[in-house]
Image (cartoon, rainbow, N blue to C red; front, top):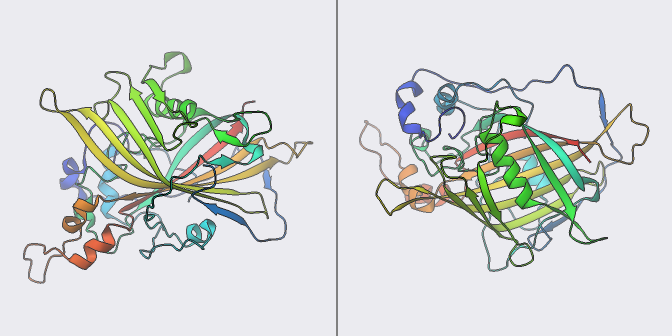
Length: 369
């Protein structure tokens, strides 16, 4: 897992310790936090949309070492699970999230529009992100093979660009949501936010005045193509990536009227290009994953004006998928008697659409402006 510590370390280097050590992440709460209240009203039907609408979890423990965290990947993680059956288009996103259904979306010819967000998210925020757990939910893929596979999202740094170092805690960075025109919908400022996220994760433990530049440019023009982003990293910022291409294949969102919680999901193909071992040959790794965010507005009990949201609790669930070309190998089962694993065609079909790994993160947004 591109989790903690070193830059380009795959699961292979940890094979010896997998048999000896297990790791389990648990939640904790911050005893110094102010009392908060979430607005709750009688439950009413939710509003949902898929694709065409303009585009879990607990607080973390202190970050363990990368070696200790990777060593526990064959042990049971948090109580996250997944349903391998594909989700139906009519089912609400919140319902699928509740039952931990992170099946890989089936892509179609339609191109999703840019994601839009609630009006109360408009403005600049300071985010604090924490790792809350992981699990291997697949019933068909062998965890011992998975941990050696570099194409599984999150197993190397920057293989999930919104979570460049998956197992990190207390990562702080600014985020921005803005309107492109007066009275228009609220959008995420993706160029600003991706720059800030990557900079924050790759500068952990560094004071504000000591931040090093790690992103040269984020190319994104939502008016031309809201589904493609290019992130160009500063030379030498990471041995894992020199350029990252993001392609969004599906989006959906939903608003829960009872408390204003906003759900949104995005399925992404990431192409990471880095330095190859041979001169003139780039290193290219494809990763497929899905992010599901929940944004819940939180009001401070000491605040007189409750109409303005000052804090937001965010849960981020990330499902990482195996590449279709690897599904047959990763789902091979060893027959009785200890013979070599035998590929299972039926299992390979399921493995292509079910999550190979699930990650859970909590993020707190504090209004900056």
